Image (cartoon, rainbow, N blue to C red; front, side, top):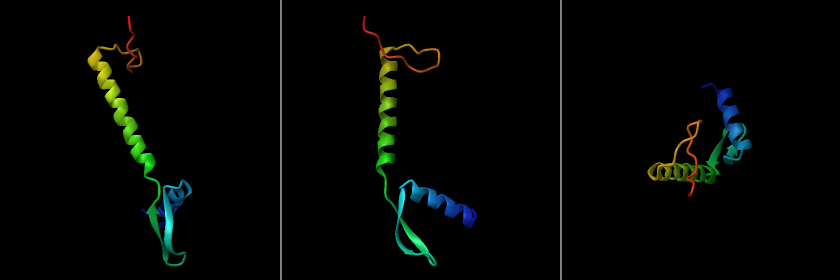
Length: 76
């Protein structure tokens, strides 16, 4: 990975507020710290909940629709 490409990726992460500069100088380089972990943990929780809901629907015998996703169970 080139120095320019790495610089661009780091700047994108700083701009999106995933990391922040914690020290250093422009001539000697910066130190970075991850500043936003909540998105990652929240996303993991959402994926876990979605998979749990799909398993529960499969166990209940919910039919799938044409796109392959599960439809909610209907109460008769």
